[in-house]
Length: 195
Image (cartoon, rainbow, N blue to C red):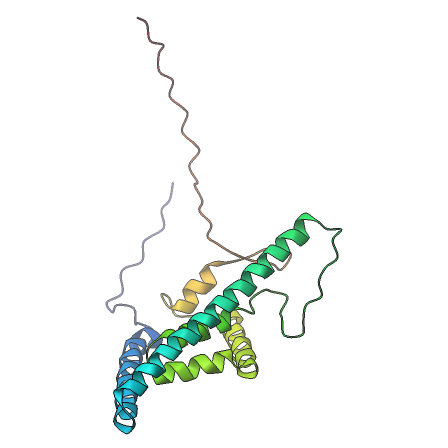
Protein backbone atom coordinates (compact mmCIF):
# COMPACT_ATOMS: atom_id res chain seq x y z
CA UNK A 1 0.00 0.00 0.00
CA UNK A 2 1.45 3.36 -1.01
CA UNK A 3 0.52 6.71 0.38
CA UNK A 4 1.01 9.95 -1.47
CA UNK A 5 3.16 12.50 0.24
CA UNK A 6 1.13 15.25 1.84
CA UNK A 7 2.01 18.69 0.56
CA UNK A 8 3.81 20.90 3.01
CA UNK A 9 1.78 23.85 4.24
CA UNK A 10 2.58 27.06 2.42
CA UNK A 11 4.26 29.76 4.49
CA UNK A 12 1.63 32.36 3.49
CA UNK A 13 -2.03 31.97 4.38
CA UNK A 14 -4.42 32.04 1.41
CA UNK A 15 -5.47 35.54 0.38
CA UNK A 16 -9.01 36.67 0.95
CA UNK A 17 -11.03 37.63 -2.08
CA UNK A 18 -11.55 41.30 -2.85
CA UNK A 19 -15.26 41.00 -2.19
CA UNK A 20 -14.71 39.67 1.33
CA UNK A 21 -12.26 42.47 1.97
CA UNK A 22 -14.37 45.38 0.67
CA UNK A 23 -17.97 44.33 1.42
CA UNK A 24 -17.84 45.32 5.12
CA UNK A 25 -16.33 48.67 4.15
CA UNK A 26 -19.04 49.19 1.51
CA UNK A 27 -21.81 48.35 3.99
CA UNK A 28 -20.40 50.81 6.52
CA UNK A 29 -20.13 53.54 3.87
CA UNK A 30 -23.70 52.80 2.72
CA UNK A 31 -25.05 53.16 6.27
CA UNK A 32 -23.19 56.44 6.83
CA UNK A 33 -24.52 57.78 3.51
CA UNK A 34 -28.10 56.74 4.38
CA UNK A 35 -27.91 58.48 7.78
CA UNK A 36 -26.40 61.60 6.23
CA UNK A 37 -29.15 61.76 3.57
CA UNK A 38 -31.84 61.37 6.23
CA UNK A 39 -30.35 64.25 8.23
CA UNK A 40 -30.15 66.43 5.09
CA UNK A 41 -33.81 65.76 4.29
CA UNK A 42 -34.77 66.37 7.94
CA UNK A 43 -32.88 69.68 7.87
CA UNK A 44 -34.55 70.75 4.63
CA UNK A 45 -38.05 69.81 5.76
CA UNK A 46 -38.68 68.49 9.26
CA UNK A 47 -38.50 65.26 11.23
CA UNK A 48 -42.14 64.42 10.61
CA UNK A 49 -41.54 64.33 6.84
CA UNK A 50 -38.64 61.92 7.26
CA UNK A 51 -40.75 59.74 9.55
CA UNK A 52 -43.61 59.71 7.03
CA UNK A 53 -41.18 58.80 4.22
CA UNK A 54 -39.85 55.87 6.24
CA UNK A 55 -43.35 54.66 7.16
CA UNK A 56 -44.49 54.97 3.54
CA UNK A 57 -41.45 52.90 2.47
CA UNK A 58 -42.38 50.15 4.93
CA UNK A 59 -46.02 50.11 3.78
CA UNK A 60 -45.23 50.10 0.04
CA UNK A 61 -42.45 47.53 0.54
CA UNK A 62 -44.75 45.25 2.50
CA UNK A 63 -47.39 45.52 -0.22
CA UNK A 64 -44.81 44.71 -2.93
CA UNK A 65 -43.54 41.66 -1.04
CA UNK A 66 -47.10 40.46 -0.38
CA UNK A 67 -48.06 40.85 -4.05
CA UNK A 68 -44.94 39.08 -5.33
CA UNK A 69 -45.41 36.32 -2.77
CA UNK A 70 -49.00 35.77 -3.88
CA UNK A 71 -47.90 35.61 -7.49
CA UNK A 72 -45.15 33.12 -6.65
CA UNK A 73 -47.59 30.97 -4.69
CA UNK A 74 -50.09 31.08 -7.55
CA UNK A 75 -47.39 30.04 -10.05
CA UNK A 76 -46.34 27.20 -7.77
CA UNK A 77 -49.87 25.84 -7.34
CA UNK A 78 -50.53 26.14 -11.09
CA UNK A 79 -47.37 24.22 -11.90
CA UNK A 80 -48.29 21.47 -9.41
CA UNK A 81 -51.80 21.24 -10.86
CA UNK A 82 -50.39 21.07 -14.39
CA UNK A 83 -48.02 18.27 -13.36
CA UNK A 84 -50.74 16.27 -11.63
CA UNK A 85 -53.29 16.74 -14.43
CA UNK A 86 -51.51 16.67 -17.82
CA UNK A 87 -54.83 16.80 -19.73
CA UNK A 88 -55.70 20.23 -18.30
CA UNK A 89 -55.19 23.13 -20.71
CA UNK A 90 -52.05 25.09 -19.96
CA UNK A 91 -52.25 28.81 -19.43
CA UNK A 92 -49.91 30.61 -21.84
CA UNK A 93 -47.13 32.53 -20.14
CA UNK A 94 -47.46 36.28 -20.43
CA UNK A 95 -44.75 38.25 -22.17
CA UNK A 96 -43.29 39.53 -18.90
CA UNK A 97 -43.35 36.18 -17.15
CA UNK A 98 -40.41 33.84 -17.51
CA UNK A 99 -40.82 30.11 -17.77
CA UNK A 100 -38.31 29.50 -14.98
CA UNK A 101 -40.64 30.99 -12.38
CA UNK A 102 -38.01 33.39 -11.05
CA UNK A 103 -39.96 36.51 -12.03
CA UNK A 104 -40.87 37.30 -8.43
CA UNK A 105 -37.38 37.57 -6.98
CA UNK A 106 -36.63 41.13 -8.08
CA UNK A 107 -39.99 42.55 -6.89
CA UNK A 108 -39.50 40.85 -3.53
CA UNK A 109 -35.98 42.30 -3.28
CA UNK A 110 -37.42 45.71 -4.22
CA UNK A 111 -40.02 45.44 -1.48
CA UNK A 112 -37.36 44.45 1.02
CA UNK A 113 -35.19 47.41 -0.01
CA UNK A 114 -38.17 49.73 0.44
CA UNK A 115 -38.69 48.39 3.95
CA UNK A 116 -35.06 49.06 4.94
CA UNK A 117 -34.84 52.56 6.44
CA UNK A 118 -33.03 54.97 4.15
CA UNK A 119 -33.50 56.96 0.99
CA UNK A 120 -30.92 55.23 -1.22
CA UNK A 121 -32.38 51.82 -0.43
CA UNK A 122 -35.82 53.25 -1.28
CA UNK A 123 -34.54 54.43 -4.67
CA UNK A 124 -33.01 51.01 -5.38
CA UNK A 125 -36.25 49.32 -4.27
CA UNK A 126 -38.29 51.49 -6.62
CA UNK A 127 -35.87 50.66 -9.46
CA UNK A 128 -36.47 46.96 -8.75
CA UNK A 129 -40.25 47.48 -8.82
CA UNK A 130 -40.27 49.58 -12.02
CA UNK A 131 -40.79 46.93 -14.78
CA UNK A 132 -38.11 47.99 -17.34
CA UNK A 133 -35.34 48.41 -14.78
CA UNK A 134 -36.53 45.34 -12.85
CA UNK A 135 -36.17 43.17 -15.96
CA UNK A 136 -32.74 44.65 -16.63
CA UNK A 137 -31.63 43.93 -13.06
CA UNK A 138 -32.97 40.38 -13.28
CA UNK A 139 -31.16 39.66 -16.57
CA UNK A 140 -27.87 41.07 -15.26
CA UNK A 141 -28.13 39.11 -12.03
CA UNK A 142 -28.91 35.85 -13.84
CA UNK A 143 -26.01 36.42 -16.20
CA UNK A 144 -23.69 37.16 -13.28
CA UNK A 145 -24.73 34.07 -11.33
CA UNK A 146 -24.66 31.63 -14.25
CA UNK A 147 -21.47 32.64 -15.99
CA UNK A 148 -18.63 30.19 -15.98
CA UNK A 149 -15.58 31.48 -14.21
CA UNK A 150 -12.99 30.33 -11.76
CA UNK A 151 -13.71 31.88 -8.42
CA UNK A 152 -11.31 32.31 -5.52
CA UNK A 153 -11.64 29.52 -2.96
CA UNK A 154 -13.96 30.54 -0.17
CA UNK A 155 -15.74 33.25 -2.16
CA UNK A 156 -19.50 33.40 -2.68
CA UNK A 157 -19.13 32.48 -6.34
CA UNK A 158 -17.10 29.42 -5.41
CA UNK A 159 -19.79 28.28 -2.97
CA UNK A 160 -22.49 28.86 -5.61
CA UNK A 161 -20.59 26.81 -8.21
CA UNK A 162 -19.92 23.99 -5.75
CA UNK A 163 -23.60 23.79 -4.85
CA UNK A 164 -24.56 23.18 -8.49
CA UNK A 165 -24.64 19.68 -9.85
CA UNK A 166 -24.92 19.21 -13.60
CA UNK A 167 -26.90 16.26 -14.90
CA UNK A 168 -26.23 14.67 -18.31
CA UNK A 169 -29.42 16.14 -19.76
CA UNK A 170 -28.08 19.68 -19.11
CA UNK A 171 -30.39 20.28 -16.16
CA UNK A 172 -28.87 21.93 -13.14
CA UNK A 173 -29.84 20.58 -9.76
CA UNK A 174 -29.09 22.59 -6.65
CA UNK A 175 -27.84 20.40 -3.85
CA UNK A 176 -25.04 18.64 -2.15
CA UNK A 177 -23.67 15.14 -2.62
CA UNK A 178 -22.83 13.19 0.51
CA UNK A 179 -20.95 9.98 -0.07
CA UNK A 180 -20.47 7.27 2.46
CA UNK A 181 -17.68 5.10 1.08
CA UNK A 182 -17.79 2.66 3.98
CA UNK A 183 -20.10 -0.33 3.66
CA UNK A 184 -22.90 -0.30 6.21
CA UNK A 185 -22.00 -2.08 9.40
CA UNK A 186 -23.89 -5.31 10.03
CA UNK A 187 -26.72 -5.04 12.53
CA UNK A 188 -25.96 -6.49 15.89
CA UNK A 189 -28.44 -9.03 17.11
CA UNK A 190 -28.98 -9.32 20.82
CA UNK A 191 -29.49 -12.75 22.34
CA UNK A 192 -33.10 -13.51 23.26
CA UNK A 193 -34.14 -12.65 26.78
CA UNK A 194 -35.00 -15.55 29.00
CA UNK A 195 -36.97 -15.01 32.04
